[in-house]
Length: 253
Image (cartoon, rainbow, N blue to C red; front, side, top):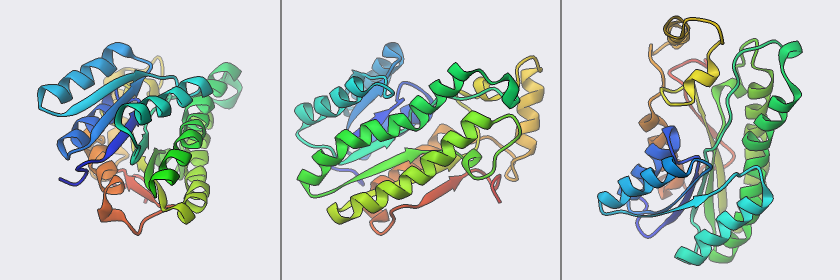
């Protein structure tokens, strides 16, 4: 098993990419700390893992709040004794809209989770990983961070910031054997998808238009991201840090 005896925190693990990753990580031997603001979804992920013989615990966490991020890291350390992997998966989407229609409160919410959330959890995880001799951080960015669309002002720039933050953290973590990488998916077939589609447009038509823009002709599945995260979390990627993997079906080419 690729993550045997590892302890992994996954934020936003109550659904979508995070849930698929939590289930896969547990299958590969990790003890998983499932974090989400959705208590119902998070607990369902834990029960799914436990029903298959895995080990997992749920922690309610809004990663945009320092107190929640600090408590998440402390709880994981207290429960399992260490933290080997932190997958910063939690994120907030944006319906396409021009900048003049973009509300300040939405801008702030997107940045508080998509960027500040990575900063906060990593801030508190780094000392724990350093004390243990190393670790891995995986950040969920987006292909929008390198190939934006009109109307994605807050979302695309937050993901671009996540990619650059990944590179900075990789340099800071390297002396302590902490690797930091990112995943850039295209839109996925998850509960978050409606939040990325235009409002007031037939959702099936909007989804088809999106799929038509992806060379491989389909949306990302949660498992696609989960396997990319597993690779980055495992020793198989031991020489990768500061990198981004595009899981986008060719969208960013």
